[in-house]
Image 1 (tube, rainbow, N blue to C red):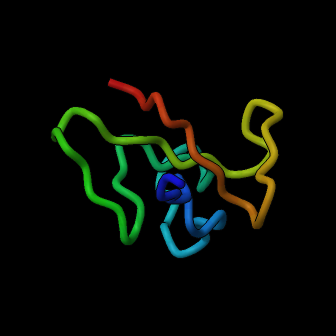
Image 2: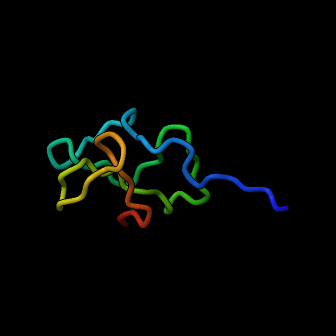
Length: 68
């Protein structure tokens, strides 16, 4: 049997402020409780409704590719 770890333990990112695009984007962000391996490898937090996207839980979801 192999050990298993969840990729995302908390599916909601409501504790992180969205400061751009009228409160719908948090670009190049490290979500609360996360750490990054490289300063250029952050993610984007996106509010539900931006470009038609919807969060599965709460109002904020991740873009794991992130913007440069």
